[in-house]
Image 1: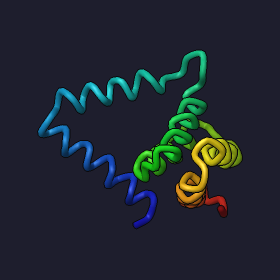
Image 2: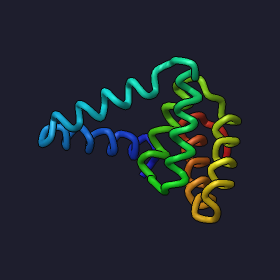
Image 3: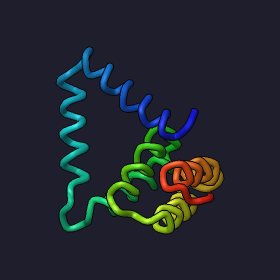
Image 4: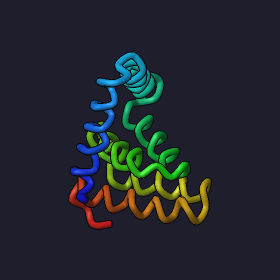
Length: 114
């Protein structure tokens, strides 16, 4: 599955879940929007933080979504790669595996070879 397809699948799945538990999903999306909005830290920086955490906790959907959203928010591929490096520092070997997946997402969304 391509990273774009994975992104669409994750977002579609959360949307479908929202039909069953709309209050919870709507509250999550409100929190998501508020937490990642520009403030003292720009949105792109917050997306990079979310990506690092997604790598460290080994969440494939988080990785795909936050790579895309970081790039869409103005982060450069180089900033994403450095974020992957910090996640590997904090998460060790398993984060290296998920970091490699994040690098593939950069290639998919930004057209930059990993």
